Image (tube, rainbow, N blue to C red; front, side, top):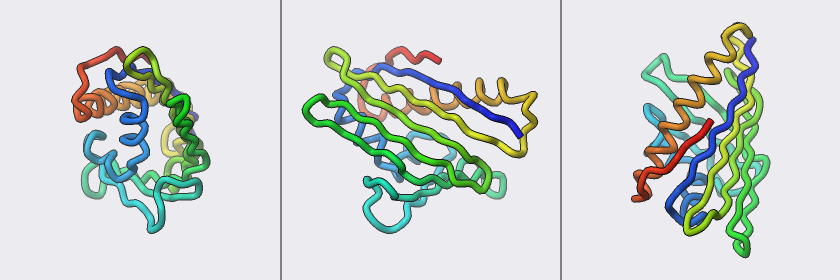
Length: 156
């Protein structure tokens, strides 16, 4: 069983609120996360307690990633936001989250993942973490492009 953790930071040339709204549009993640579809449970998806499932991959090889929103804080006065989801299995367990903060005329996204992957030996967790960070970095760049912003720096 591997414990996998990583963090990426990305600067957007877009207002914090625009990036925040795109990130909490769970079904919309399918537009910028490659080979992913997202099924959102009935109810308001932008509330604590909302649940959704992301399917990443092809056909029977798609990874099922069920999540529950445990924190969803947006402060319009400061244009800052923080979100956390709990990974509730059956494959991934743990937490993921992000913060959005204004920086100049744009904003900074800080995305973190801290999950347990039962089908991967702990020995491989650094490799899986690096691959996860690279994959999320590519997805975030696709999000930036979909928002019509010019490319910005992503760090891991």
